[in-house]
Length: 151
Image (tube, rainbow, N blue to C red; front, side, top):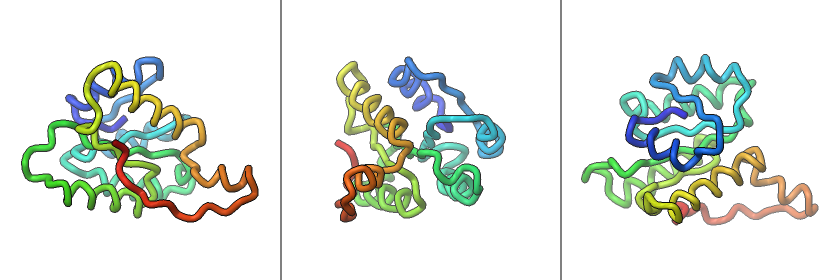
């Protein structure tokens, strides 16, 4: 998990039943990826907002191209991020082949909200971030769906 300290604390609560490894820099993340992980969670504000650079580095590495990546925007967003900017983040991370984007402001920091986030993470781990598995198992081709942020 590559996250700021406030988001790291919340993700630890959300994913308490998972083994989490935290990193403070992009270099640490890349070194830790040499070990087997079920998912990478990147904070938008990680390492002085280097999330896009790290996402590109992970996807450029042949050994890590299929690992599920979830990009997360925590509640500490400030006023500079408008809804339009957040929608742009959502589209940008998916264009860079992240498997999902969550704006945690849409999920209360309580048992219900955190449970919803945990189920999303569990689902991405279960399917290895591969949403096309459904098409392969049913023999149907999936038409790209409208990719809206999870609410």
